[in-house]
Length: 582
Image 1 (cartoon, helix red, strand yellow):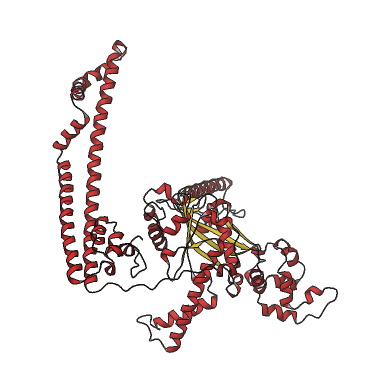
Image 2: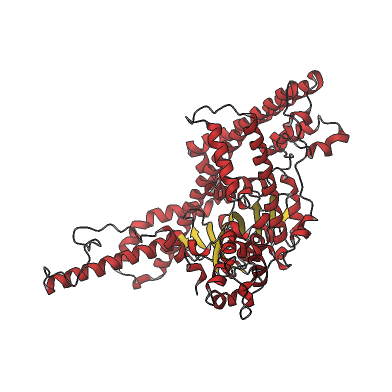
């Protein structure tokens, strides 16, 4: 038997249906197994290894109905007898999923039209016409296969889909429970060494969730910047190599009875440890997702609440009744419950919570060595305290808000000035590189000319003519190289190039402006603090400066914080739960 090929209608029988059929059975001494009550029969059969399910399934209709029931699947999951396996979907399989109808090959008038297939009963075609049409068909099939290979090479990798620009992989792992497809786990993998300092660009290109994860946890090269990950990464391997993020986990509801996490935990661990991913990642992250554990009934309730809130017209929303308010509270509580369930799922797998980003949604990480230990039980995971978000301070107001706005405006302006300096420096570096290349080319010309001269009569007439054309130019170049260093040559080009003058003048003017602006900003901020009672800590101005990486502003502000409060100020949480070091 191939269980996964059984029709859904046949596989998913309810417990009630099984019980009803059993009530018609009388005790049979020759076959006591099928005479057991449904719950007793399920308890007995749930210990049977998956490899023996085929024999049981083929033995009789009653056992087949029991094995195919949701009640049996739930019992296997709840008692941890379910056997979970994972299969990474190859790039060829991913391609077939993305293109269920095959390649979309455009064909011209001379090509084979797949809608006009060859038929043995087509008496209107001569043998010659049939041969021509068959040749066109083969040519069309060859083109279609060639297109398929080109798409596979460009947009797919050994791990699944591959982004053409940033080379990140979208990975899908199918989950089977007792040989039947039960769900999937998907990942995205970013190859950090390949991208250099474009890690955050790649994360942003993939999705909003990955952009947020990348920005909060890593620097522009993908290296972890939060303390909890850096302290766990004792060998420094998490700074490089593959960055793996769980994007989706979905497991059939029958394998999640009464919010049991056995199968989901085993599925995530199995997906992370498929052979194809071995050695392909050094840091894995996940964000808790309530949708993993919501039941179908939960989802229907949420859908109804959303529709009712929008109103029948879909515009403006209907006024919430007390009953609807109560329903919303229940849904909210259920959502928090499922979020914590998903958090405990990852804790069971081996992940650790990231305390620096504690919130209503939990963030977790894992290193490869975390997965060397067995999956812990749900009871053991309950002993691990889930870190809840702290009570956050309110946003700044009054003089504190004024201070924050001043720093924010100055930070935006400074960011533009720094970018202008960087772009100008890049342009000037290009001019200097061009000057070096011209200088080196002159050295090459001189050496080639001298080599031709040393050959004497051995050179051809064509080479001799070329030497005469080069002589005056090479002589001038040699005279310059004999009397001038490269640094002198570069200074001469700087004096003669207007663009060089403009670039250096622009950089100088911006640097001078920055120095004046810093003095003005210092006076303005000092006045606000000393005369208007503004607080550097309550304004979150340090957070703003740190977010823009403006250490000069941080130096100005930290001087206005009492010395005994400076350590606390650097670790203050703002209204969104971030410290300046985030």
